[in-house]
Image 1 (cartoon, rainbow, N blue to C red):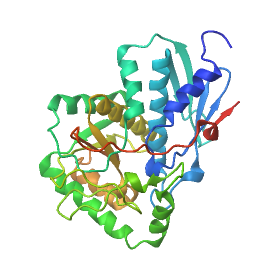
Image 2 (cartoon, rainbow, N blue to C red):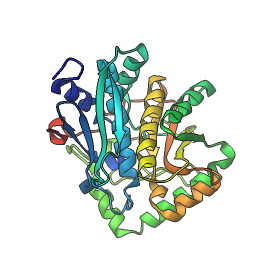
Image 3 (spheres, rainbow, N blue to C red):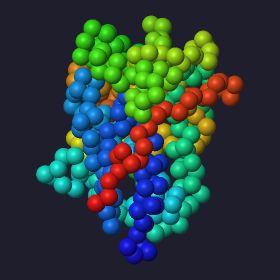
Image 4 (cartoon, rainbow, N blue to C red):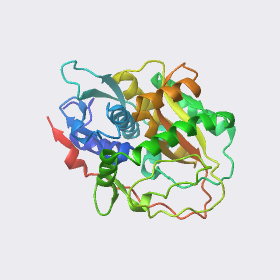
Length: 323
């Protein structure tokens, strides 16, 4: 291998950071292959949640987030990535081919990679202090580089977002297939996949913005104060597999930007797996101008709040192969 390409060890180091990306129910639905001159990303459709994510949209968003994490990791290691997305029409699981060229890391590259190690999905209420408008603008601007946008939902439209979220929860509580899937992928103790009970909170009171309720909840709220989270809807002007992948990249960029600014985040997608509720969010919150892929909660947690325990991940060797 020439000096103009990273070796296997550098690729493995980058993938070790990439697998820290968030994924629906922490399913980690990706596989990686390292060749002599490339890294390839594949979707693991065997990890698709058939009740939660019947069209595999959230799976694609999850893989897009991992793809962006990989680019950030390579940048920190001194490599610029060139990405060919959906390179093989005959292999729908082949999501990206990544090649690298040398490029010294910037301070911003290093800071963004550092955010990978501390970013966590915090499902607790965010009581404040208030998030600065400049911070929110910087976070939402990150989406544009990926052909996506982020709609900051104003207070007057929050009821329009809350309604389909509550309707989704009401349907799911009576859906045996969904409940069985939720039990399989949450409340886990000692597993390397799924959402552990220590990272899940109980259902919110009916007057608050709802969040997905997992099976087994051990994470206690820091405060009973109202949740002051800001809601961002990541969206794209088109609705196809490439848009879903790019929305995932945008989501990752926004999460890491928020983390680097000391803010807490979590992802919400429960109503987006239902066609009518997704269409409702598109009509009311997005005014029919774009297609929603995921919602991001952004807020501030006081320094006195107990730190979260890490969400588990598979080892790199479980998801990596050499070509």
